[in-house]
Image 1 (cartoon, rainbow, N blue to C red):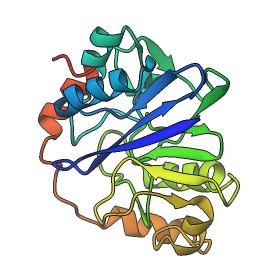
Image 2: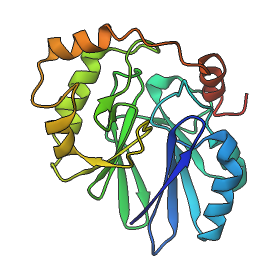
Image 3: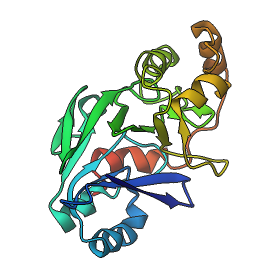
Length: 228
């Protein structure tokens, strides 16, 4: 199983191309519309059969390239059912599996940043979207976000994974590319060292962050799989 990590400089978004080396069956996670030509070219260069365009959630900071990828490769677009994206071919639920050759991606519903957040687990790696970031986590103040639900998602699902599980986040603003579950359990300042839930909720509920710059374009665009 191979993982290629791609980056969009404008939105600080990581896109992941995950594929089985033998069968060449692939999935792309959290594509960015403006990077469609890059991704299309790369998929063709590697000789991959793109089966799935997976979204970790309905994003507020960029528009997905999933619809364009579906047109180009006849892949299936997958969004969690609580994201309410009627454009998706697959309405993801907790525990759903996506086969890539000999490897299986498993969906884990990890709400809290939004109500429809999904993390994807495969072969000792987890793609956490905006739920768990490196030394941080997703904000919880819009799109049915909930600091209480996010705490439960991270502690009961993500932190329950083996400590050496590699964490691949949806964004990073400091230049980090990956972490591990064990590192975040120890070192994440919002969640680590068994921080009590009320303390975490206080941190998240008093952040007073600015409104995402692209939210008015990104959310409607993503509810249409990037084809609005």
